[in-house]
Length: 171
Image 1: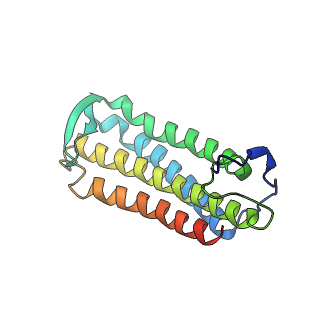
Image 2: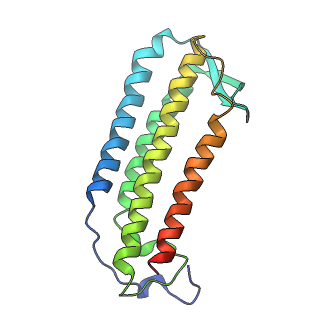
């Protein structure tokens, strides 16, 4: 955020959700439902000790209770609710470039799209970690895979980089 600009001086406008935002929100909800369904269906078959931490190569290096898997859908749901609420107030976000009457609508739209997309990326991460952790616990898989961490970081940083490029163009 520009240090010379107070958040209270920004235009407060309502940004109606775009079709893309609605699709992202729906995908996020589907991901949360999938997490709950997967854990409910597989919980009784899981051993009492399951992988709860992985090293950079995607190999399990920490073990804990199978109840740990409930963290993914619960945290995913809480995060979904919080980010959905926060997304209604884009004028309160920190921005790199000053927000004014001319660029507010476009900057807010880009920021709300970023938040929606990050929301589904994080839910997809939780869903994958839960699913793969269950597979490891059941002896079907041995780890997350060597490509997991770099691929997730590439996707996350790619999303954020695209946002900054678009926001720079709209300043």
